Image 1 (cartoon, helix red, strand yellow):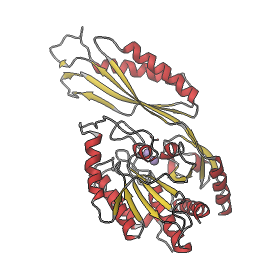
Image 2 (tube, helix red, strand yellow):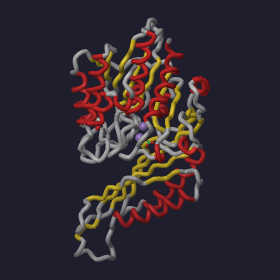
Image 3 (cartoon, rainbow, N blue to C red):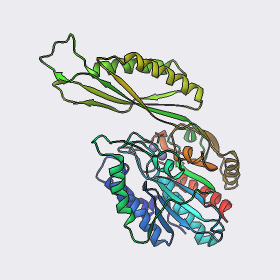
Image 4 (spheres, rainbow, N blue to C red):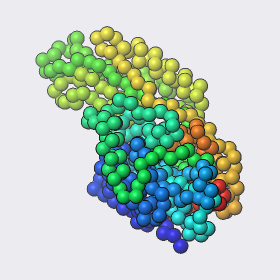
Length: 404
Ligand code: GLV
Ligand code: MN
Ligand code: MN
């Protein structure tokens, strides 16, 4: 009998890294993140799995198959979190994948095809303005260039230091493996639909298109008391006008369009100085590219109108990932879940996932379990222990059918 995922010692010790915080904090390449990837690599080595790390800090644990020339069957998720995130977003798919592979080895021995657990370095875009940088590197898509975090540390400097420390772990190979034959990601739903429908398992048909922009408004910083009101170029006042226009444009585009400004950086952020610069994020999502294009056209026009020689406004597009997932793998998972006694719900994910990137290069599928209260990206994120187990059970069967 394997340890239930909720009391799995590796799961608990990775969660304990953030014990002093309000929630989970494993922003990419930070000390907590390095400690978590280290623990995972060491657990893989102890378990006699082939442990690898690549240049971006993606971790790969392989249970080699009898036919090693065949591409692997991969599962996993991301190790990073948002600021003060929950216990399950990302980590559940990694520990769930490891648990499934351990169970299969215990019960059936060596697989025919190699089984691979992947812990992608970064999916959230919470530290640097880039998302899915780990899976994009593995999938041979984009690489990150010239980014800095809020404290001015560059992505390159952070990445190199963090990866150096992972490379030094005994018996860890420094290499990016070949692409797998398939990718299956187990994840919490992060929304309310499974709970509302009283279902345990969700099958993801597609992942919404998600676009992010960073918009910077330049004003002129000056003394709050001595500068007359007339003639000030206050970047925050200009930003509030922009925010109202963008919010109205989003509301008029489509009822299903989600629109969020979650990050606002005011410079110098001092009570007695007129703000000289404001940068804010815009995140908008919809299943249809046409609707995303329509809102992007409005956003671009609003920003262009606000961009004046005395107060320049710049915008930078960060990403775009509308993706259908593999229909055949979904049908197989529906059959497996039904045989295990579940009545799975097929849905579209409103959250972004590494699967959106992986699906561009290999057949990819996702399994969801319910999120209590539909809450995620918050310390109160939770799933009933039986539902966590159910997700791992379906994943185990799905991997068995693909690899044995
Ligand atoms: C990631 O969790 C996202 O959907 O932003
Ligand atoms: Mn996630
Ligand atoms: Mn997330």
